Image 1 (cartoon, helix red, strand yellow):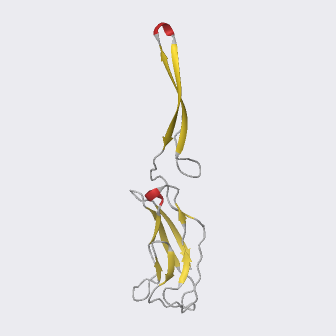
Image 2 (cartoon, one colour):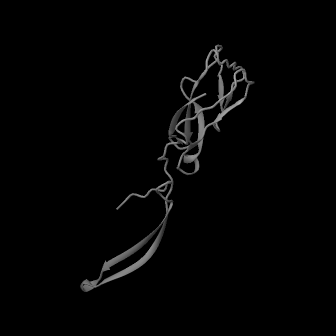
Image 3 (cartoon, one colour):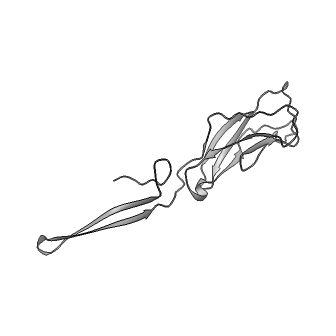
Length: 150
């Protein structure tokens, strides 16, 4: 007997099973009944969000205005409903200005843009590591981590 998996790419949430019921009657005579059973699997939060690209690189011009688009993150979680809904959060060591403000802004939808007080000077710093987490809506939530280079 195998376990049932409802999640893409190997599983399905609907199963049709052929059922055979056999009894042993008096004198060893047996009767059989046949039927079909429709089984719909409920989702469990067994998948972790996975970023859709192994390498994510964004570009932005130095001295850009605040809220300038840099990149869009994208991750997939094969669970369904809340278990598969992905949001994004800043990871450890998010780049900061000298005043301690965020150099970049990350929305829960995965959009990264320049911060409101960010001054980007290529001669001072020509790339930034921007760590982010993709988090699903399960309980407990599962997390995938990615570091982007801008």
